[in-house]
Length: 126
Image (cartoon, rainbow, N blue to C red; front, side):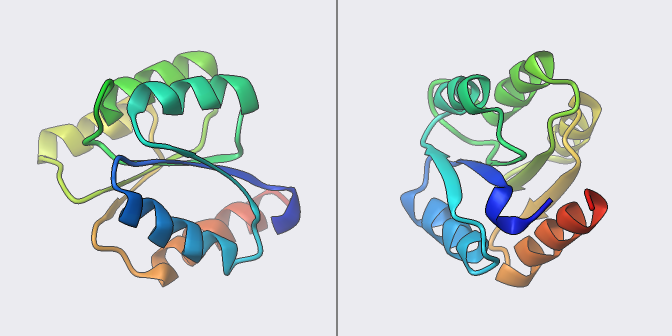
């Protein structure tokens, strides 16, 4: 899969966090990026667009990240979800993996962490 063919969904209630993630993703050559500010919107956008990778925070209004992960995995058991969150107890982090999330990145993140995730995904799909 080529970077220009990838669609990314970012779900985070923080405008700043979404901008930082978007900047890191765009610098990798990916331009198709969907954004949601709450968990329900993330689920709705996932259902409509079926993005290749989802970056999702745990703390969001309307529907939290755990519930959003659960619903997205019901839509597509192969969804590629990367949790990017500043908060998360060990039990919450464990639960995200049990539900199907592939990785957990602690905020504040470095753009290289996002680049590593994207590089792994793009190389793995060639």
